[in-house]
Amino acid sequence: MGSEAPLEQELEALLEEARKGFSEASSALGLEELRTKYLGRHGALSGYFPRLKEPGLAPEEKARLGRKLNQVKEELETLLARRRSSLASTAAPVSSGEDLTLPGTPPAVGRLHPLTQTIGEIIRIFRLLGFSVVEGPEVETERYNFEALNIPVEHPSRENFDTFYLETPKPFLLRSHTSPVQIRFMETHKPPFQIVVPGRVFRPDAVDASHSFQFHQVEGLCVAPGVTFGDLKGVLTAWAQGMFGEMSRLRFRPHFFPFTEPSAEADLSCTLCQAKGCRVCGGKGWLEILGCGMVHPAVFRAVGYPKQTVGFAFGMGVERIAMLKHGVEDIRLFFENDLRFLQQFP
Image (cartoon, rainbow, N blue to C red; front, top):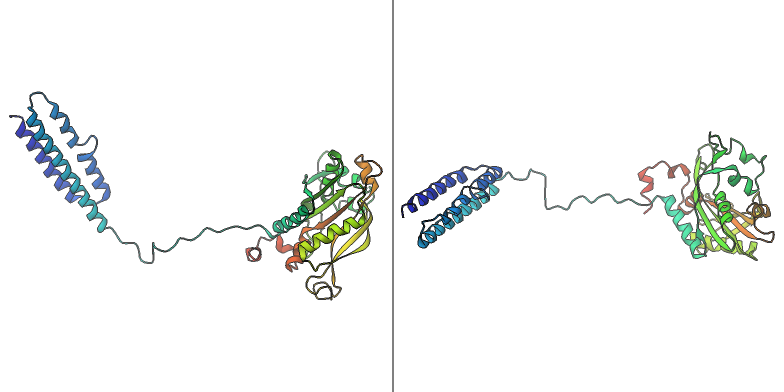
């Protein structure tokens, strides 16, 4: 019995000290320090529980002291909770002008560039017509960019003013069209096949409303027994109607390209005036849109195809298509990254 009163007195003293500490706590941080001091795993109160196991204490004394310890613990926890609530209610209010109930600012959502959208639409239609997509390098050799495409050494396009040559020990250059990919594909594949080749090309043109030193092309190649110019016209007409509407028409004018024979320029009926003549088409009713033709036999010889091989090819400028489709009159707008312009294309 002699050890009973001192232990209870210590607990009462601890409780009184904690009451004073909790009542004087002025911050959440200070209150947390007091919780650790009295109720923490290694706090003051936890040190009393092992003393219940001291020898010499009768069972009824242990029970009474246990009840006292639990009573003190419960009161300390109550004091702590009350003080937390009191500090929370007196916290500084939200500064004026801030309404935390308003929804947050949503993040800006990006979108595809109009040229990327146009390339995607062109490819989508040709996929429906049975074409596969093939890509290739932008840095090329003269063999792939010129020689295998039946472009002779004296051709003007092989001069420095029409092609970007790279200063390297070997005659590398930036491709001036995506046709080299057709050569690379034919070197490793046998007919029949139908492919389209999208990509960026480079030519040292002066930049103005209709020209740029870099632009995008989509070229196509179909090699299969018995294909004719009529098949070419049918494929391109189906593509034009899918791209510009079912009322669209194409007309074909004789032209010259080194890599096709016969060759033609294809004009699209003006989508604004239905070929009647307007400001956009210059009163002609037609808009030049692409070049095409039957693949020249010299191209097939360059890749080792048999003499009887036949096929057709075509090529179009993506910027030209995008300008016609969306009524854009200056090609530079596609490259200036002006969000006021780009945000018009959802």
